[in-house]
Length: 455
Image: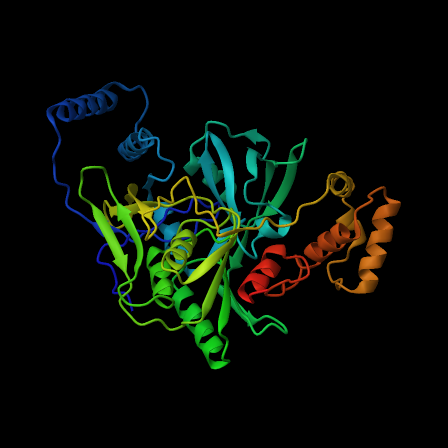
């Protein structure tokens, strides 16, 4: 198994509930400041002394220095570098356990807009219908344009067991959508797996890359080996990433010794290049296919790139998100620190992932609603027909489907049969355990089955 890194590089997942992990590294501060830097440090010291002696009200040294550190990092213009105060440190401790308190979305800033990277599996955001690519414009009625990512994350996290209203701009919709989400404790299962019915093909869904993911993926692969399964579809759609070490360890389960998994490159001219290679025999040697989409980010992109570039399998779906910069955390003491972007990830073939994403071998978008169905969906949403017509304990049966189609038609929503069945099924499984896979509506999964079966 890949040896543990002495200095672990990990992703900053800018989540409304925060996922992933920064493992702090204690460093002594080595001064290499140039003469101009000394001048600016002198300015800083003088301003601090002026405030202490002249400012009309009581000033907290802690608040001033914390604010100064935040200002210094904000000046970098990098949404992923940030100051980790005591509260942030506490939040980071719960990241890799798969437990969180919040609504369950990862967000980032692109071109000044707050964009949803992905809703997290089984979270309030996913159950409410938040989608990758949604643009958040307001939080609890307040415009957030120009706000720092850290502040937006805190606004969404809010107070446990309360609710938050998000106004969303979504492609294909003329009017903004509003979602009210509950901030609740959620436990995410890192890995789900099964054998596709009547297909003799394994299905392995990796929802995030946390401290338990390698263990769970190992269990799944041993299960497939024991059943004689020669082909597996790995699903990392809507997986925002997590621990670098986890994605490397899982890659090792599938690659051979000496195979390059990923490399990182630091500041130009720094000579900081690190190549991560597999060091063990693979646990599973059968054929692979990987499902990816816009919600596949960071560690998901590392695993996908490693499988593709080493010739272990093909990718199917749509281009990944393109979030692959390396953050390293530096402890300032036991309770505070900074997370700074120090490098970017490259696939084994040398392809830069960050801001570009990975294009799949087979471009297959999911089915989308027709223009008429979109209009009917707006009627259903505006009239709150799902809440009125579908009980929380309903089952997805032929009778329920037929009844639902009739009732929405009476209310002026003329959805296609497939569109009606899809939203009914999606709504019902917001309130009960979802099946591990869905061959009825999952176009990408069906196409993956076709390709890996050689049909």
